[in-house]
Each structure stands twice: as C-alpha cells, then as structure tokens.
Length: 288
Image 1 (cartoon, rainbow, N blue to C red):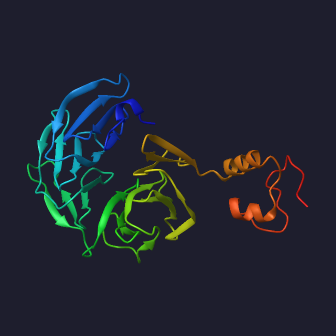
Image 2: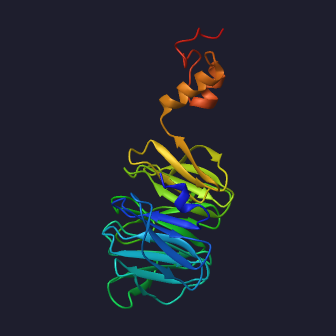
Image 3: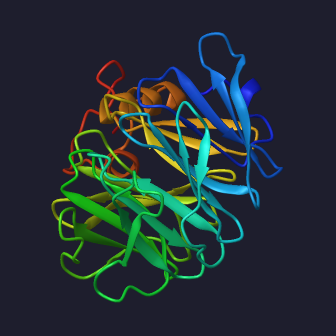
C-alpha cells in the first residue's frame, strides 16, 4: 500500500513499476518524487500549468506522463526531470501507457481520446482513438496489452483490441453515471469500474458481463488490484479500503459476523450459492 503520510492531500499518486519511486501530485500545480524506502523527496519538483489529474509511469520507468485538470499533458523524462509538452487537450486529462511502453492513451473529461506514439521524440505523434469515440473518460490497458478498456460518461465500459484499438463488441453497461476509474486484475480476467459516485462494479472480461451487485465506497477514485488479484484496493478520501474477492473469505466473514449457520436464502443473497440445503458454515448446526 502507498504510505498515507506521503500522499495525504494529494490529488493523484503513482508508484514506479519497480516499486522504488513514488510520484505525487499535490493540490498545487507540481509533481514531487519520493524514495519509497526512505520516504524522502528525490529529484526536483516538476512545475505544471495546472494541478495534475492523473499520473502514469512508463514500464521502463524512463517517462512519467502527467494529465492536468485544464487539458495540460506533459511527458517528464526521468531521471533528468525534463518536461516535454504535447499539444494541449480539453479539460481534465487521464493517461495510460501500453504495457510495452510504446504508446500513451490520453482521454479527457471533455470526451477527447488521443493515442500518442514515438514518445521519445520532442513532439510525439498524435492520432485520434479509432471509431470516433464519444464521451470517453479513463482508459486502461490489460496487463498483457491485448485489450484496452475505456470508460464513458454514460456509465458503460468499452473493450478494444490492444493492438488496433478498435472496439470489440458493444459497450458494457456497468455503472449508472460517469466512469471515473478502471483497473484490470493481474491475469486480465476481471475489470473493476468505479464511477464518480464511488460505486464500483466488477466485469468478467471473457463474457463482457458485470458480476454481482455494485458496492459503494467513500470517495473512490482509483481502483487497483493486489498482485495476486484476490484483493481490490480502493483509494478513498482519508485512506484506502481493501475488498477481498475470495469467496472462501466472504463465507468465513459471514459466518463469523452471524455467529451461526446461514439460511439457504441468506447463502443465495450473500454468497451466490444455490440449492435447498447448503452448509455455508459447517462449524454451526444447519438451520431448520
């Protein structure tokens, strides 16, 4: 987990792929870097034209992409901290690198979606996201780069081919309002989708179907998964919440909280089990 003392009051933060460096965007128009082990600031603060909305390290840790609240987009060369500034977009900018680091997708709260390549050039090449997307908000590549997921203003998610970036089937209705954050599990099988009202839905990637009911956090803005994919971490105002996705842990917690076995109706509602006789809590007598 990110050290809360370093990120308190931050608009956005991101840890480098090797876990050694943390980039933090505060309420002002700057980005600061910290050594995770020592918790000390390293390098220099990078001034921006507006407060940062999103941050992303390239997989090789040589670039930091910064999306600003006023449409600013910066590429920061590391470790020199030299800034490059592609043409500005409209409104707040979300940024996401492809796993191979060759492309950067920038989407905005104004509905723009641009793909940048040749990222080492002074001015990277920019092309629109294919398919004339409308009202695209955040975007995220799957860990293996085979898929790109984009959120929408209408609360849906669109899956795209990770190479061509073209759409794969219809959009998936997940949330009832603007999508604000997206995360894949490390194996790419599940997608967590958060909206601006802090409602989070899970999506089965293979079937393109939402899983279960939505659950509500408190100021959720950035869902992420632990490396084993069994725990969903939700960045919230004042800290973070951890949600286990292991059904065995759900069952154990339900039994502990109830202090008894669950009725068949309770098992169906809370654990998704079926059948007239299910011993959800074997240590307790079966309910009559």
